[in-house]
Length: 69
Image (cartoon, rainbow, N blue to C red; front, top):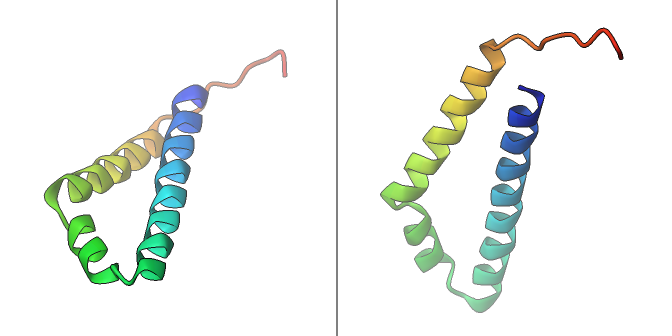
């Protein structure tokens, strides 16, 4: 489970960072309205929903304690 949580955090961080960079580039090019419309598409919403559901589901799974640590 620790690996699943780390992967979820990594994927979410990369998506958030990439989205921030893309929005800044769109703003600098004067294309922010078009970028906002593209980000309001159904696949983006479903990806955000999937990440939220995965985070909530992983929060209910207890972490197994390792006696060696």
